[in-house]
Image (tube, rainbow, N blue to C red; front, side):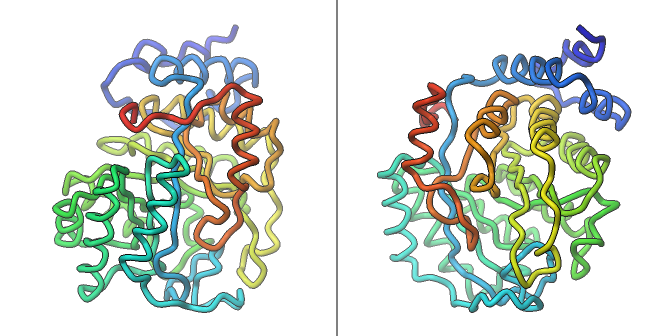
Amino acid sequence: MTANLHLHSSVEHSHEPLRWSRDDAEAVYASPFNDLMFRAQTVHRANFDPNRVQLSRLLSIKTGGCPEDCGYCSQSAQHQSGLKASKLMEVNRVLAEARRARDAGATRYCMGAAWRSPKDRDMDAVVAMIEGVKALGMETCMTLGMLDPGQAQRLKQAGLDYYNHNIDTSERYYAEVITTRTFADRLDTLANVRDSGIKVCCGGIVGMGEEKVDRIDMLLTLANLPEPPESVPINMLIPIEGTPLGKAEPIEPIEFVRTIALARIMMPRSHVRLSAGRTAMSDEMQALCFLAGANSIFVGETLLTAGNPEADKDKVLFRRLGIQPMERDAQ
């Protein structure tokens, strides 16, 4: 067993945040795969039931027409993806979708709008959606772009549990993917969300042509925040025709699993979500991700505009692995 296996082991089970260095994170990432998986599963078991996975559902409440130029996104108005822009969904329709998701076993409902930031005229409807989903007994999550302190406070007052705002990649690689905002803009919104008292959902996307060090640095940024995100979605890029990353080479599966394991080790108490890209993953790859500490997935046929495994397929996989959906109170 390597010495790296014991690095920081005395504090991984504690409630205190841990400051990580790049050297330490690189050493863990590069450790022998069996050692890495053993350590990740050990950390996972110290903080979560290893055979429970949280089920979340994601709905696009406003699709397309976004002014940002994110290289991976079909919803950018600057890309020729063929996606037509739509207006903000009516509140009643959103709540009907949320009710169906709850009845199908989802305990967290995530709502996303393709905005750079929300406009004041849209906030009343967003607040009504949050209040309505909360009334159904579900956790609520929104992703609406950048927020100022006042907007974050209003969402908190409405009862929002989580706000999703991914940093996407490392600070070094960020401008290769997005030019219409900065990495610092992302961190400012995260600070506004945290200061309002809303829990943070923040992760990134791998397979965008970044290097290994970019994946490590992305996780370093998250783990070394004053308080790490409670939820960390790790997305595997779904290349979409018409976007700048539509021809990107896929990440090697073992490298993806290593990224999941490092996220679990660096952020022991966070939910690590296996997010976009599961349609391209074999059952065996997903099983390795769960072993590495992933304990949350999105269910449903679509994630915003991209495909996702059908519910029946997930049920079969869970049954084969002996995994049960996480109960609402366990979150």
